[in-house]
Image (cartoon, rainbow over all chains, first blue to last red):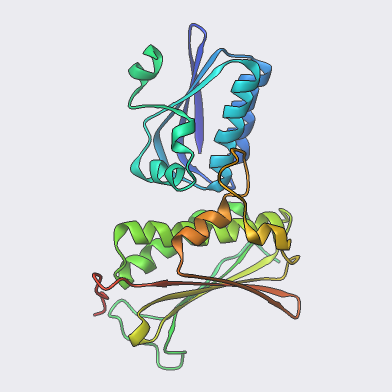
Length: 110
Length: 167
């Protein structure tokens, strides 16, 4: 799993590459929560275009990030969900609780 | 225990059964409770389910169930200790009940009965989703414990529209 961070004004765009499973989700969680709780970034966008797999620990990290964003009044947005990632969120009825966009431009404009 | 992965594949590429082995046995993996090895388990399950003739969606589904089950063993039964033994065994179901039986065994702590029941999806919170993914994916999910060994049995039938790709 690789995670890179870009910043545009008050937005952080986290690009995740690889599989989010038990071996990588602690790192995803750490970076995401740091961005929200420590840096207090007003808007965090996750680019999931290159995420090939996500397990329940990865989903839990996203949910925790969403809760953290709500706690501090910021926004967490997702884009580039593969059918597999979409299906995993759908199975646990989480698809509708996230702000999801097709691409980065849409997420930045939202 | 060393960080090793023992793989016993019981069918040759030509699909012939190895004579001395159980005729229903398809695959056996013995590996330590190291999260870094989850991708190996997923790779093995993807190839096996493809070979058995499951649809692409079913392959993903069964693979996810096994991945979640192994994750639960690492996280809960072994509390994150990375060098404890896990055994994954896959059997082909008899011809009349075509499908795949998967048995996962570990020597960790027994699961909390409350956790085995799963949780409601109405509550939006992190955690507790793995068992839901397993139940969504498999036709049979059975847990037992005997002599200090936890045993999770998962069964997924081949749907009638699928055919077994056996050479």
